[in-house]
Length: 126
Image (cartoon, rainbow, N blue to C red):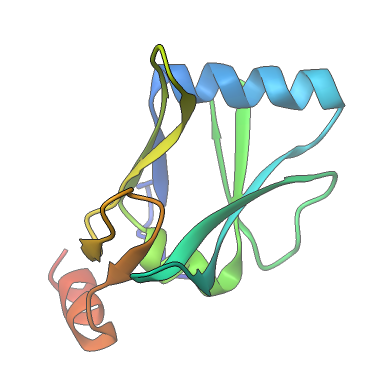
């Protein structure tokens, strides 16, 4: 929907691609769907869920054996995002480096996006 020909909607770091491929294989799933929902102190939160089949309106990104489907309503907000998987002594999980985020809460779980008009203008200049 909001893609640029020849450019993936999101990029996966090698660590994220390995983890997603591992999760797909372990559960026998077709991939992970990434979306957004209202919530958190900054207004929006990322969602991730296993899927067994892509929705026809999903934007599908395949990289190094990993498959990510982007829900239609999230595509504009996730375009240009790099997804990483980080492991530390206290936690491990997916991290989103999203150029469309204007603000985030202190814990990083909740985000606020730039204005729709601003995002649209940035896309038309790309």
